[in-house]
Length: 451
Image 1 (tube, helix red, strand yellow):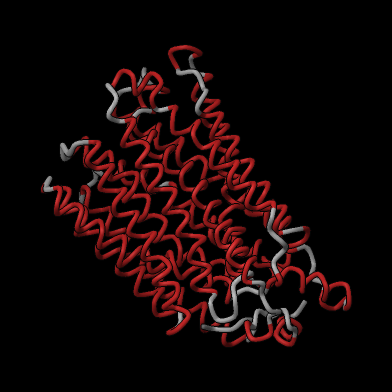
Image 2: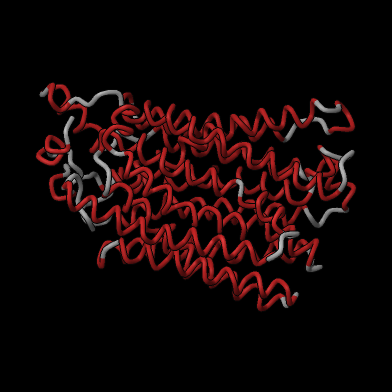
């Protein structure tokens, strides 16, 4: 299908032509998106936290401490390599078969993989089979997460009332930070256990507890209707053969490759910085700066809770003043504040660490996190939103997932720890440029509105 067909179609993404939304479904959809993202990031953060604090000793006890930590972060990064696969699988399901089916499958698959991680025997019991099983489950978790974020964004934004996609979409990503708060809070509590008990069985509690979130999320999502945009797409396909696109994967690469690349560049800095903040900085602060482990977990929890609060603020603001400038400013601010945060860790002053992390989270990360769901939906037609949006996001997440591994490896470089924020600044500049490029491209083709 040509861009001209999309531009002239009511499916082009023009909010003014979207069918009316049901208020009850809009609210339920935003809550369903919130809960799915809670599970996604809860699972992600408990794995990342366990990687930073205990997995090196539980699954790699025969390696040196430095190598064990690198291997532990490598298993964390492995799941990110599987994410684009999940984006393709669930993107196809979500664009061609059913948005609802896709988001139910991602939630069930992700939850099952996480619960099973909580019952893996340690290396001391089954040897090398233990880390192998861990990596396999991490891959399955990555595949599921690869489709979850894109689906959560769509059910929240496509059900949103006219002119409020920024606000409603922000709840999909606020759930991610809610999951981070929950995960770090749970780990902060279990980390109070004696070290031998934490390594023996205490770390398993957060993984097994995810079953509760899975069941609640599935119950909420079962009651959702298909999104109005998806229903209208299928209706148009039935009425006009010209409106029916080719395979969404092929169509995305043929007609929206530039958009996907821009999304990847835009989101890479956000993902990398966030995992530096919430995963790598835990090990750096405790091992290199001597900051108490439990204290750091609570600092991360407070800063992440701030993102939950600020997400809808920035999302709602984008409905009023536009999204592009906010996206660019937010990603640059997050990278700049990262310098202050890394410097504060070096001082060991908990107040400075908390203030700098809160500034990075609330005035930087929350801006991008709250605005990008609607920003992406604005710039893609509904026929390929799930596939193209997910592929762009998950390609960026691959870079983010390797952030902690690269950071711990750079500690011994010439720049030392400062190599990390320098790289993040470069990524942020590329991201800001990509935001403007994407908006300019959308205006030129007329395939979607620019808010």
